[in-house]
Image (cartoon, rainbow, N blue to C red):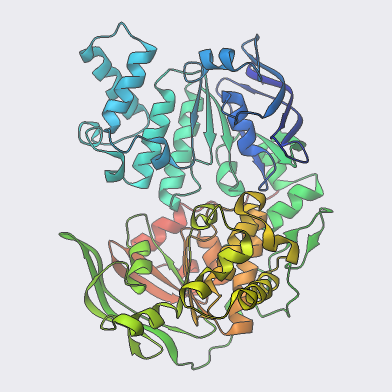
Length: 549
């Protein structure tokens, strides 16, 4: 490796009131032209590292250790010194690009402001040239049009490119990319990963925080594996991903669902680094591909469903059935109508044509008490559990919310029901009184699933429910969903851009493109032998595990 641009020495971070440090003596370095990937489970310290480098940790956080940029010492605890290099010498691009962009200003105006701060002597025309150059550098097509738009009018991939452009506006020497591909469909994630690689090849030092081991393996030069704030191992990315040395990394890699074949249950790394069974004891089931076909009456029937957003057709003549005990995967590129379908099933988006029947009852013509009852027959799990849980409520009260709305039981009965559901989703009684900030990402999502099951609905809609989770936590949630189908006879509509997760959990799959079903069938068949260009594009952009040479 050439001389490092950024060096971190013995970095220690402890949040106020925390029992253990978030980072415990971490040291690493990154050179110009290099992509250094930082991976690990939730709570390993990945995002803390990204925030610490930029001095963005919350007030009251105890920070110690050294940070050097090209030999110039900048102490992590010196906020004034960090403020002088933040943006100018080190830039950061966040996972949620929409949240990092100002919603009331055009993307071009925001870039122009940052360019003006970096080079106050530039006149308007020269600033415009610089903004257009930034847009071209990050691959924003038709920049004249896109820069005039507000963030909500950009696609997810376009927003992420705009967020990276903002991070580059100060012409930094180091770019910290914090989970910038996790919320994107495979083609867009591949494009953003390729962009990071191109920026590194042009001389930028890139620190890429990620939980998608296969994706980051396509672009990273070196890999740093964190666990509980400490480095477990480090080395050349391809070497570690193909021949992991530590039991922890081996278990992380084994926890990934695969496109080619899957076990009946995904192993989940336990506290002693040994693979363990799912948290709640369950009987093993057959692999997805060998579940026998059996006739079952559909609990959800959708026929000719069409939804329009203004003049734009969001869904066009969508037709499918979903039976008890079945998981139906829904995949497709961003903007294809996946989330619109989820919202239409709860009548949060108005259908312009077609029919939806829940256990034989017409959802689209129901009103009043009948509509409320039908909505209770469908549970919904969102992508971001932290955003979907009330931060003021302990877990048991979040789970009991549907019971309160439906006026079911008294306080004592609702708590008993919440505790039953906590056990069913693999959490312990002590989690009942914890608020979301005291739960891990996987625990939060289990609480969200328990809440969705509170009224015992026959149908569960999961809208990107695992995309924001690291591989170990994701494995536990995928196991849990399969368990619920087997034990409850639950029917699950599993919307995701993660084809490997769909391959593991689903029996059948629908491929959407531009609001239409372009391909459907058994999941193993469609994902092994896709016939439509949209399906082939998704599969081509999905990285495969790096195998040992």
